[in-house]
Image (tube, rainbow, N blue to C red; front, side, top):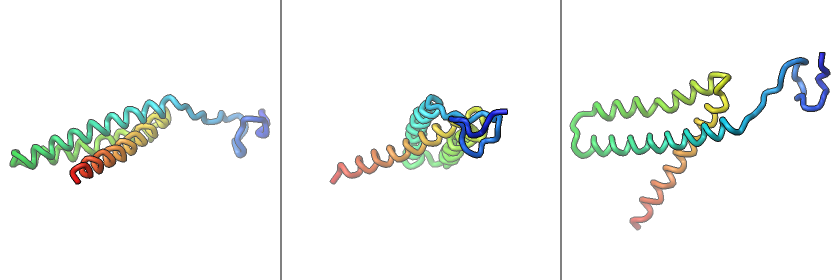
Length: 115
């Protein structure tokens, strides 16, 4: 039996259980994929929104786009719920958030250019 006071073992860890290792690769990879997916998501919403606003009388495209817009978040939740992909899922959700913040900044700067 190992001594829980050995160096490298967090306090409160039962003897014999391996510590959880935080790896940067899956988190950074998930964040990059999340940002790319977010920007694709924003592009699809803009294209569908313009199509609905300027020429398509049917709202079916908007409803489909809304359902598809939920897909990246659901994928992130599924990834984060599985222990094997938890770190990649956390990176993916962070990437979605970073992409949205970046998209809001780009939008604000574009509207600010007209002044």
